[in-house]
Amino acid sequence: MTGRLERFLTVSAELTAYSVFELRGTGVAEAYLAAVQGVVGPAVVDAVLDRYDGLVATGATGPALADLLRRDLFSDPKLGPVVRNVVKMWYVGTWYELPRAWTESYGALQQNVTFTVSAAAYTEGLLWPSIGANPPGAKAPGYGSWAQPPRIPATR
Image (cartoon, rainbow, N blue to C red; front, side, top):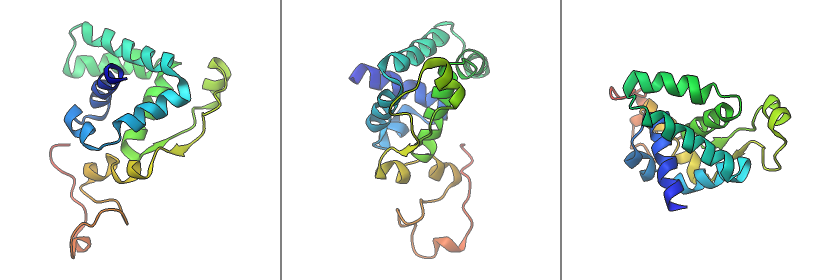
């Protein structure tokens, strides 16, 4: 699973605009990969990873790669909903049930339900650093920090 995990982190970094280092630092990468595989199976995960590798192999970077991702991955009828769920999972820690149209086209999946991946997934969601805030009730922001509105970091 190590090779697949590294590939999953690389794709996730491109999809979330966070670095592999930052994603690994959340401590939930293994749980996220296991969650995706548990719902859609390793073959669909490998299809996502292979498609991404193929797009990167074109040599496209920056906006050109973003256009390819949008056209060939996010818009793919089978892989697009899975990829969008991966992005949402990184940001809020929840896997969302795939749309009915997906299951009608590709088959029902036993584990295809909405669920929070783990308790750590909520606290480590990318939503919080993206808005410059701490997850309510989970990480102490420091005395009086609630008195000021969150600031979105300039780097995001």
